[in-house]
Length: 271
Ligand SMILES: [Zn+2]
Image 1 (cartoon, helix red, strand yellow):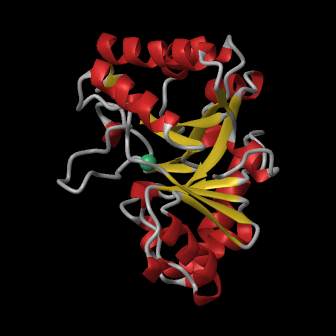
Image 2: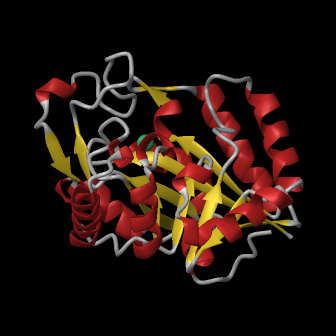
């Protein structure tokens, strides 16, 4: 059996509810879980490295308050509570650029605590899983994440990030060429980059995705809702790709779609 986790990043208090439903209705109706990385308190001034507003912000973010907690988007949080196939993942705190490259222990701890509290206060439950903005994690942040969460999902792990006590499992993973490993009780899951993205041809993407899943025990598939709704316009080719992916995942006999919580509960083999 091959296992797939579908992870969609950058849901926040400025995400239109209809976009998530348009993208994921074919998954939800088939009982396929979808993992949403939710920004607890979105910073509407966050920019890309070139200074443009982040892709997940609306066209005129300066008209909004500087930060908005997820609980302020009542329509979205009610929708997420009503559709339990959505798994809620903590995605940083404000999602400012590389915020978890911080080395200040107090700041890291406070961001993790305050972020989780905002998700709980919004009725979304206490997250078992963490995803860092831009997949960037400092060594001290990784230590705190492993203590606080049951799963960390990121693009890759480097030896310099990993505390000495975890070198044996980390080096074993490297030696065996495995994507995933465990730091104590915490499952450390890497992913192969964005397999579903508007920058590549849809047919080639689905073929690459099927190949990757077939060659691995557990694949974390990362995408972003704003790739299907760029600057507030739906992209029909990307939507078609996503819904074709849902058809394939629902019909493939040797593939099971699981949640991060399933991994946290030890129900999914990592390799
Ligand atoms: Zn993000």
